[in-house]
Length: 204
Image (tube, rainbow, N blue to C red; front, side, top):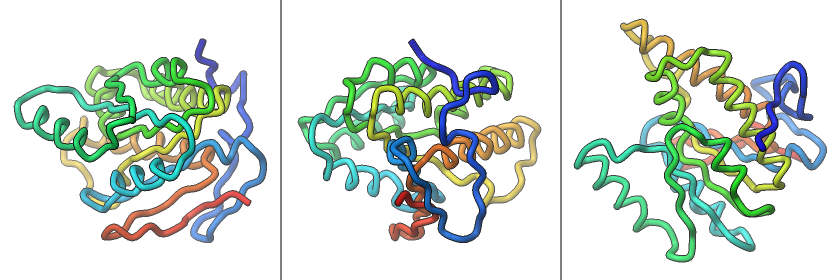
């Protein structure tokens, strides 16, 4: 069962305000559950996620959101699989991400790569904006409830040019809002610049 972190059932950390640009520290076990890695294209986000997960004790799961839509995407997915240790388990789920997390073993380390593709798919399916955020909140709540160590990869879409199309702008708004929800719930947020992680928020 997925518990939503919404206005009626709030999960600690999901609604915490962030005071940028200073590095923020948060207290409590809830904040240590999620690590959010942000950055531009080819900034080293996925490589950083793999490195963090490799340090974990116990099982590691990789939750991939990309679809095998064409030959190029199939080659990219195969290449990414080769980068991961053989002992890791991979689950491919482009839509029902909270439900997939709910099936992960309690206490496991999970790499979610990536939120950008997941949100893009939801927007393409014309899922309403608040429903998209409900699903992102459900990710936060499920990670806490199952005590997962969740490492989330996402793009910072706001660093590029403003999209010329309505659909493109809707995607940027949805992704930016999703990133904010994840960042509020996360104990650690890093910004990747040319492969170098810069701490934006960290738990005490």
